[in-house]
Image 1 (cartoon, rainbow, N blue to C red):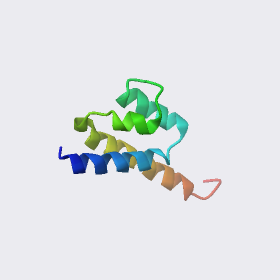
Image 2: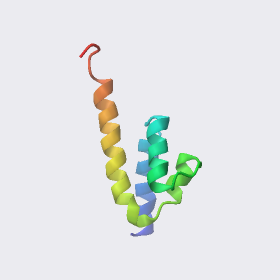
Image 3: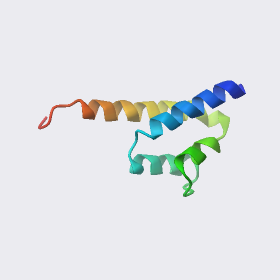
Image 4: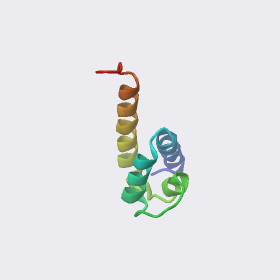
Length: 76
């Protein structure tokens, strides 16, 4: 992956992860940082380039679910 694209992908992943819960971030660490207790930004920075596309998809789906829950009326 071109280094500029990889940097952009990492930025997108980080932005999405900062919107996620601590539990969701921990799951991300388990999947992509082998469970190491590192800050989420470090986990993203240390990811291999070939895993970035999958990680973007997963983070995007998670953020979309969070947004959907946030816009649901209470009691539904």
